[in-house]
Length: 127
Image (cartoon, rainbow, N blue to C red; front, side, top):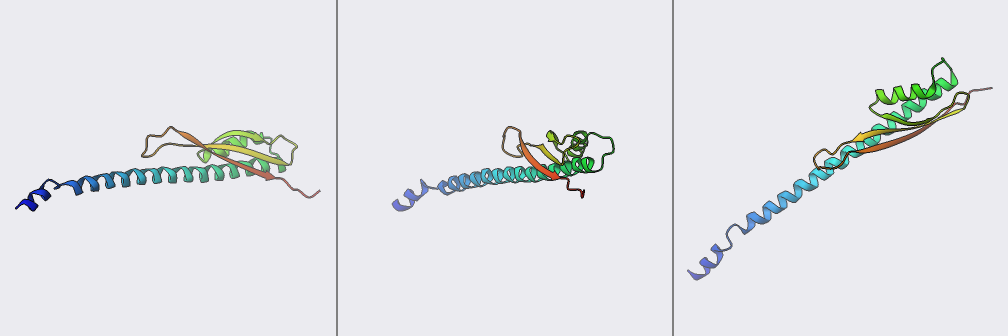
């Protein structure tokens, strides 16, 4: 009976290890979900920057009287981003746009950050 008494004192030790492993797996899963959200926001920022730069370049190529920077800001806003800068002066041949998309912490309590997207569109009209 003595050996059995020794094992009784260790009852439940496996459940502590399993609980710790489950906790670690949850933290890793939450971190992976947040990284995924950041990568999606970066892709959205790049796409919004591309669209805003193309809109500004189209205005530079075929002027309709609208400011190219205003047009770029409008397209960025429609795509869930905000325009940070637009180097697209009237009469120039290229538009360089920087936009930001906000990334919020999904599961982990992280501070909000911005994903930045930069795009350049060049107007090449035949002369």
